[in-house]
Structures are given as structure tokens and as C-alpha cells.
Length: 152
Picture 1 (cartoon, rainbow, N blue to C red):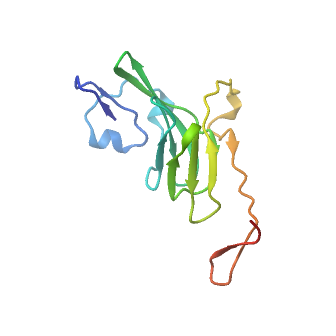
Picture 2: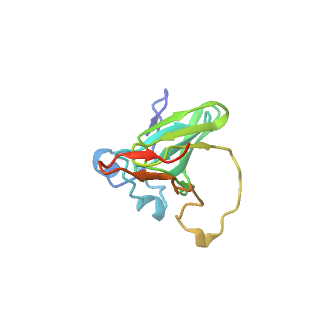
Picture 3: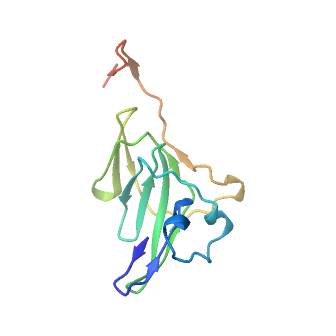
């Protein structure tokens, strides 16, 4: 939810809780937006620039969100389709030049670069992530259940 200084409210419902806890009207939602059911517990957010940020869900799915403004007034929030599948995030830190470090305690940590690229995605892609981070690892599990590196 975004509330501007002029008390204008712009919402982006992500699950069924919004209708239960808010009286803001969402009549302009499409059927897909109304049926959206994201579990945000354990998720992280990282801004890519002033008007775009990534929501990294607890299962590693990366979803872009755009803040659309008319002048200085936010008019809508647009959530895109999932763009990638990465490791399970424990921490997310924005670095220089669009790099984002996604640290994980349950798998390999990754460094990704976020760039704006407009590509037409075929309809049959649906809600499947376009890119997937290779999670093949060169690590073995010790008897005590901790990860230990084989090579650096």
C-alpha cells in the first residue's frame, strides 16, 4: 500500500488478507490480480532504482514491482510475473551497479544483477519464472548436517 501526502491511497493486493483488513476499494483489479495468493512471510524486498523493486519470496521466487507515477503522484503499483528462481533468502543486500546479494543459510548464496530489459514473453509461459539460478553446488553435507565446501 502506498499513501501519498495528498492522502491518495494506491494498493497492490497480494493475497486475501487485504480485503479482510482494509476498506480501500479494489474494483479495478483483474481476475488474475484478485486471485493472487502470495505468502510474504520470510520474503525480502530490494529496490533496483527509484521506481522498481524486487520481491524475493521465501521460496526464492523473484517478482518485479513497478511504481508508476504521474509527476510526483503515484498512480498505480504494477506487479510483474515471476522472473527468476533463486536460493532461499536469509538476507538481501543491494550493491553497486544494480547488483543484489542474496545470502542464504540453507543453500548457496548468489549475486545477481538487475537490469531493465523489455522482452515480449509468449503467453504459454504463464506464471513460470523466466530465469532460474543454477543451484548445482560443489558442497557435501557433513555428518552433523552442516555444509562444508569441497573447493573454493
